[in-house]
Every structure is written in C-alpha cells, then in structure tokens.
Image (tube, rainbow, N blue to C red; front, top):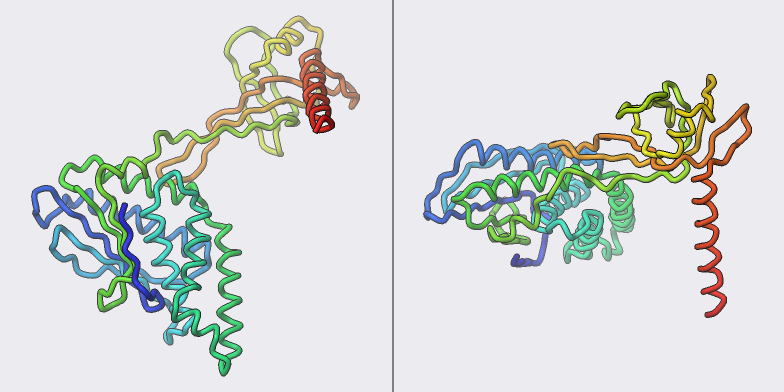
Length: 332
C-alpha cells in the first residue's frame, strides 16, 4: 500500500475512488459498483452520526481512466464557516484513512491519528496562531478536543464490517487489479492518496463474522425454567433484566439437579461463569447467538449463598494463583 501526502487538507471535500482493470477497460459491473458505493456511504453515515457532523453527500460524474468516481461532502449550513471546512475535511480524511488501513490497525488509532494530522495541517495551524483572532484560535482548539471526545462513540464493528464487505466484493470481481482512494479539493488537487493492490484486499476482509465471546465470571441468573431431565434442552432464566435461554454446560450442577439434591423454588438464583457468544450482521450490528453456563459458583437458598463443589474448587484455585503471584512479587 503506497501513500502520497500533499500539504493541505482544509479545503478538501471530495473523496475519489479510482478502480483500475486488468483489461484496461473503463466500465464496471453495475451491481459490484453499487454494492461498493453502498458500503462506503454506510461508513460515512456511521461517522457523521456518531461524530454529530451534519453533512450532505453528492455523487459527481464518473470518468474514465480505469473508472473514477467522486463523493462530494457538503455542509448543511448556508454560509460555510472555518469550522464547517474543518469538519468536512475531517470526514473526508477519516474515510480515506479508514479505507486504506487493514484489519491489523485499530479503528480507534486510525481516528486518533487522523484528528492529529488534520489539526497539524499548515493552514489550520496558522489559524491557531493568528493573534488578532483569539476567539477563532479558541474555537479551533475546542473543536479538536470535541472531535476526540465524539470519536469514542463510533461503532468500530460497523466500520470494520462495512469495509470488509467493500473489499470482499472487489476481491471476488476479477477485473479490478487496484483501487486508489484520494482526498481532493473541488479542483481535483490531491491532499492525500492511498493505493491498494488486489493482493492486499484480503488484509481488509474478516475471516469470520464471529466475535470474541464475552465471559462473565460472576453472572447472576434467576431461573425461570430449569431442565430436570437428560437431553440437550435449554434452560430459561433472567439475566440483567432480560429473559434468556442458555445451555447448562456444568455436568456437576446438572447432576445435582437431576438427582434431586438441589431443589428449585420460586425466585431460585445462582451465580455462574457465563459465556456470551456473538456475531456481526452484514450491517455490522452485534447479535448474541447463544449463552452458555460453564460453571455454577454458588446458588441461593432462602437468600443464603451455598457454594457448589465446582465453585469451591474454582475459588481455591484462584486464591492459590493469586498467592503465587504475590510470593513472586515479594521475591523481586
């Protein structure tokens, strides 16, 4: 991936996508093109909504040279202020950076770095220094901090998934050999440009929609419907105020229940190690696919906690590991 940097981004409000083809033609399958553009627009929507930047996006005429298309970003206010120019340049710049940094680069780091680069731009730096415009200097400084704060609201899963969809689509389209993403002003002068070869597309594509599971070591579940007979049936309980169905993976606890040693009463509650499995939809939304209870630490009988045998073993193991770490620290 090659990067070509130019001096100023303040008046840059266009993002160019340049597709190069192996057959030197100037046309592209419409479904592929529209799919790619849709993913880019979804990323822009996520950025503008979470960053609270009101924009309009226009498509400019497609040109040859492989195939070139432009998205023009406009502010909604009638009179464009310096603040508007900075926000528009930010949206265009962050889109360009996001589309050119692969999966192994954290989205939060890309956003942080893009904000820093934007406010180091020569023209914006000069605005900060202008002594006769103290209020402007203050506003620009405030805006930089505000963008950093708002950027924490961006849903990284949406960005990662939409970008993955974009490159996955191009990867399966044989004509494309390279795509370039550039931030430009209306005169087509390039502020920054990135080129991504086809052999790099896979670096942007997710291997799976499965996410790392969330493990809650001391989750509290109120049992609504236990499973009292053998079989692969799911239990029903209330967790964090929501009714869930879960697999009871603790053989010890199931044995205690099925043998009648543990008897359920209304409002029966236990504390457990809960694994929450998740995956992303094609839109980047996170969906929970299953709940699994691996170990029951304790249950409550008339509000009195009763530690289970497996819970006791788990606690003692944790205490031993903690003690070992303490002794190791003392040796140092």
